Length: 517
Image (cartoon, rainbow, N blue to C red; front, side, top):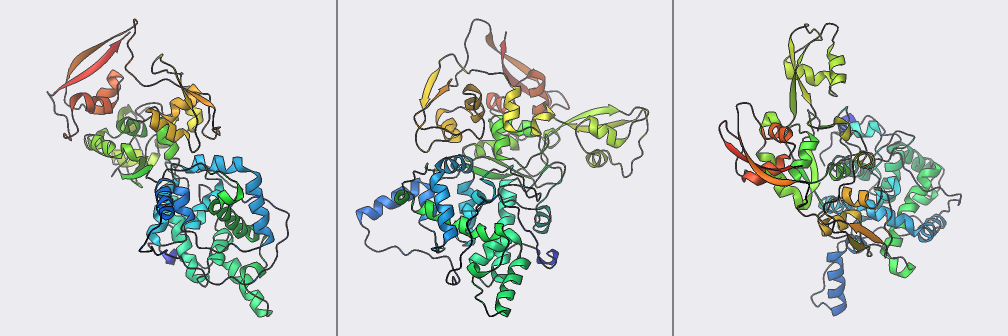
């Protein structure tokens, strides 16, 4: 476990801010639950037809993969029964959660399996945030795992002007699992204690356990005197696990999630304009924002973490395209002449950047600048506001662009999500949302139809396509050329077969395909 325990001073109080379902049902005590360890199933030498069919289903459906590994005992308890009934009475909630979880759940399951942790922990983001990476609580907890600022800081999650790691799936998942592994041995290797401590802090759990022991009472989880939210937290998770594991028994149909990678965390090595990143990945900025909710500005953080999440099927081409971008072309720069009355902070506000980055970019240690001198300022390649808006807000600013007039209809099937439909139809989530007036949180109804305009090269009477050549000048970069001609870096790379070339050279001839109106 890579976690610096020296910075965890004493007790971690109010570790997370959970958005737990509310209930007035009173807590009941039950027999003490013994320590639970993760069970590994043993395959029989002889396999029946039914077992083969079950294994095939597990390979194709992530929910079945999760169900088959569950090991925590579901206690016969009034609170567990109450929350089980709530989930059964509100199947729409699980539909929405499944759609939100579909890009991220496989990644989380892989992380849990790598650490040999109970698979039920993959369901904690449902209890905590409804699998909404932008969820924010009154206790200032944020993200899928609802990490508070002190906990995020203790476990190395970066949060600054550029980036909120609590909302980043990779950073927050690592921190949450580090925290759970830290708590487990302190909680007597008892997962019920550990999960409760994740919600309210180790100090509160240890105090409740010692109080019961001092009075000669049972110290099992169900007998502890805990805050209402914490007392309901473990039962809610157990009820959810029971519903998912026994969905068929309870008459619940869970939309399947493909048991395959949906995202990949890519090491980008240094700061990168996210509009340029979207071009390199050949995806819409809305789609890139949706899987990188921790990004708050127009670029990744200058001091890291230098990672970006991209769709798995785009990762290889994104890496190749990124390798062709010159280091000084990852973000745009302008030469700014300092005016009388200017200050570094005022200039930073004007250009949507930070004073620290201006200082480091210009070798300035203090705040003194001289009117008439020049500064080099990092700026967004396109609209800097795009990085601070939600996916829905970005779409609202865009025109409806139909990739062709050949309108088609797609009938929603069980297990579909916007992400899955977009990939199967070779369009973007942004296009689906705009064409059908949907939002990221919109629920898809099986049997309803979506309008789709298949991607194809437009041929119309208002414009003609022509190829032009461009001779690279000293100081040029792919990003600058792309901006000048209103094309993307990815298109320049494709048109000129630049995948194996890291740099463009002065005098080199590039081909550009332009459409004149």
